[in-house]
Length: 213
Image 1 (cartoon, rainbow, N blue to C red):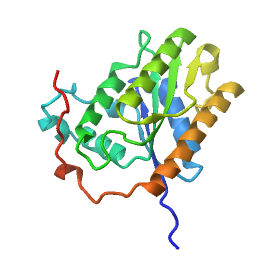
Image 2 (cartoon, helix red, strand yellow):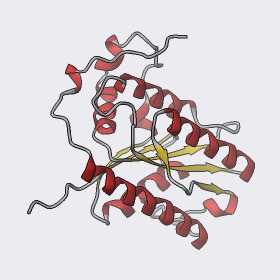
Image 3 (cartoon, rainbow, N blue to C red):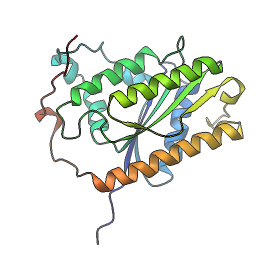
């Protein structure tokens, strides 16, 4: 009897700064999940420096090597974890621009982020900015047809202190992140077992935009 496929989880950080708390938390979350038997792809801020998304003008945007790799990882994903710094109470423009490109998966056999578990982490100096940023990520996840996990995590103030390895020093922060990641893994395993992998190359998929405003 064949063993079930290992789920694949994609991690996205919206911080453009190397060594930022958002990037380090993203990497720690990915290591935690990988140690529990899933495969992972990690995109830090530097990996998401794409041209501005332009609806209805795929062309060179879709042929951009970084965009192709990004969309291929998301098309194969069973779960996604979003980590964003709070920029004026919302997600970073870098992360939002990258997520806008998911519209180019509209005609894929598994369109957008349909059916995927989406874990959300907001990193901020204060709780108010973290809370509104978390809400924005969950709204975007729903709009992309994903399923934000029951628990979303805000990491603010002293709760955002990390050790040299990027591990949150605060026990309650670690516990909340691990609970959220556990939910992503559980739902990703279900998705992986129930979803056939279409043998279709992204280059062969039409990438229409549903609505041009």
